[in-house]
Image 1 (cartoon, rainbow, N blue to C red):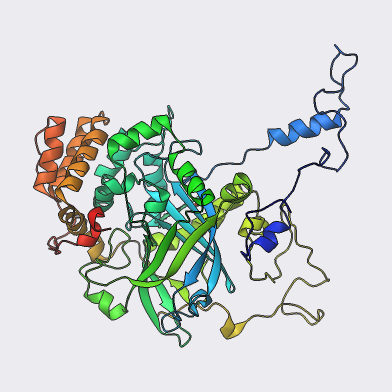
Image 2: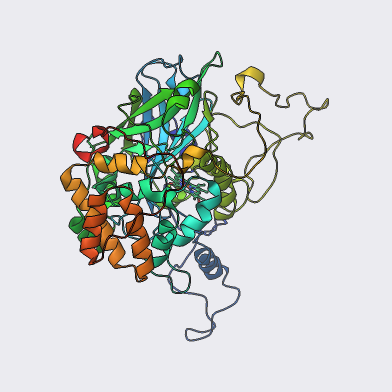
Length: 535
Ligand code: HEM
């Protein structure tokens, strides 16, 4: 069919139905009428005005006028590829999710990597977090693991997400700076939000300038739940480990590439796959019980905290291989809709208040980004598992649901879908009794222990890069009080860090920011797994 790169990926069936082979065909309108002349509009005389009746010109221009859709409100710049996930073993002891049911079982995936802050056309190698979003087309429905390349996040509660992004994005009056955190508004917000401190350590480290999408770790960030067929549940953290190792650029390389080759990561991923150098990652989990979690010196529902690997080792589950580039960037990479709410039986949420907000945000934004409620019918978003329900209509509906009945219960239709009971998704019946309040658990107020853990786990080279990155970023901050507040926060992480940054800025180290809690800063042993040199 003119697609030599199509292998035995089960997703090819659905995608084949919409693949178009234009080669050697005559040009037509969208109504299938052959076009005689694609060069000239219809005129009254060769020098005359264009005729209103030129439906061929009008259709062509009208379609062009509507080619653009809104870019993602975050993670606008991205690249994606097809591949598969293969389970190493039968993991049914920890989860009933069918993709982990037996050794060698393969599930098709579509993976999109992205930057967070930049616009759709921005450069790849800027200092930023990278998105690592995986859509698993499992036989129980789609599971999206919508993660990042950094295991912690900026904020602890979804309530703060619009503020964070408004601070990160270009300033609203002049649209600057594009795709960079180096400006007053970001550092103003950061210096007033001490919960961000751990993330700032990662963000100023080499992790925020990866060498290649193929050489990044990925993390689910939040604590999730795994649930087995008997209903037993463990908490878990998801980890992607690149088989090629985790590698970063140094800042001078990144800055130069941003000018010389803004597509550096996009091209690298594309060319590796075209050359048959298929990138691979291992998926692993850290699992722990609620009783274990209660003993940790941090709250597992706090997304600014990680579980040190020395405390809970990562257990490998299977591998991800990306072996095919998309046919069409817009149809696949741009229209793919990942959603933190897309889970399958065997995988469940925790009560992390950031995750809880994400469950709402993704479908909501996609309704406006992708034009209505039927974007699950766009081929890249359609599950391989069948869809049967009584949802109907909406913009651009494709499915031809038949019969007079679209409700349940009913006595009129022979073949109406019925609820699946135990075979379907059931939420883990976590017992909860509490007052309805706004606020945070006490351990959430410990903002410095893990920032210090990260700093203490870096080699001297990495520490110097962190100091240099803070210095670079803060030299772009024009308001002296903001710089001072950032420095005051860094004193709580490490004197050497605060001193190094202050020296670079020609400033005195200010007194530390007051802590938000009476809890002492917890003294973690350094975690070698957090240094790039161990990866
Ligand atoms: C994309 C919201 C936190 C990872 C998005 C999008 C929104 C959003 C609206 C654009 C989706 C689209 O247009 O298709 C939020 C909210 C958050 C949050 C409200 C917190 C309350 C996070 C966290 C992570 C993350 C903690 C990582 C664990 C991603 C990724 C994408 C994304 C990877 C890009 C998906 C793609 O490639 O299409 N987020 N996000 N987000 N988010 Fe979040």
